[in-house]
View (tube, rainbow, N blue to C red):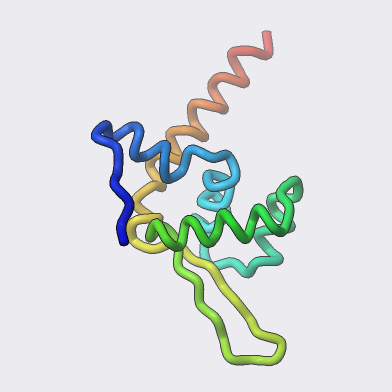
Length: 107
């Protein structure tokens, strides 16, 4: 069952990616498919439990897809869906704004 989304589009976007970990997961998956361990290593401050929770939520929301390979040990890879890829301009804008802000605040 799909959840009811807020009327405001900004609120909808924040609902889907407003948590800091989700944005960092999206950042990492923008460069391509990653395994759980690669994401964990890149986002070192996140716990395994929280990373798992965030990945599951993003999969439910249709932002990422999870592919399990029938190997021993099992291999699981995560990648962006088309909806997840469509967030790239937002992440690029956040990157540019953050860079400009840091440069402005140096002085």
